Image 1 (tube, one colour):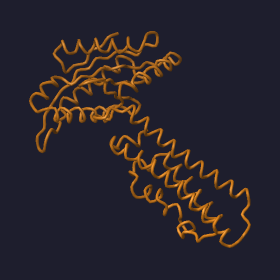
Image 2 (cartoon, rainbow, N blue to C red):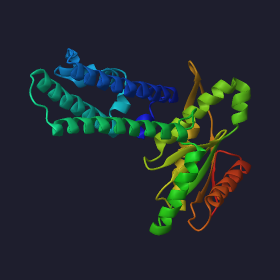
Image 3 (cartoon, rainbow, N blue to C red):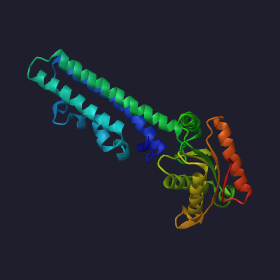
Image 4 (cartoon, rainbow, N blue to C red):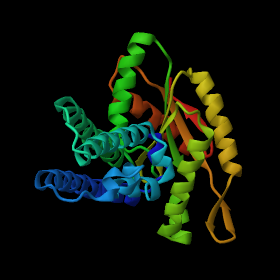
Length: 296
């Protein structure tokens, strides 16, 4: 879910917590509404205001506290519309009740269906956030190894039918241990984060970056033959070598990376394709680093 990529993992966890609380609050809202009708008590003016969906606790949170990037996500747009329609439908019922008009069974059923749709759509958003948390590396916010295997397996099955050429790339930051030893692990983490951001910025939207472990990243490049992948990676390598990374206020360093590339082979296991890219990476390291090597 792309809209979650600009949200920290702690924010994502807080959103999950808030959604749980707000769903409980909506149940309490419905219970209060039902109690008022059954006991013939006064109705809270918020229930029948011009925009009741903006005045409930969920509405206040949605419009004021939900990160803008997430609010623009398609699922959030669905929630917004369903939540608004639910409140307006219950408002119609409450206005009719206050005016002592007959409330049809169909109107009540429609309102309760909208209430159920609202809860189910919020649950869908929660599931998407859980999925994001499970598949994301907490430091670099790239995809993690759990997501890697399922993604490559899906792609392997796809290209076995389409015949498309796709590349598996192992990328490793050169002399990363020296960075940690010289500047400390906090700076090392900053280098990893900025390296991930660099890769994401120079690759195509359809390419994927995974944190493979330590200072290693796996890059999946779809619809590229081996020669095109090598040329593309060499341009990325050159640009990365001249890219200055900020490690503290006003202090910048240059680092390089080595790349090993192989093709995703639909005839062999995912591990075999990754092993080829890994062997190519070792060849790049033995050749002096800051270069691209490949396995056919």
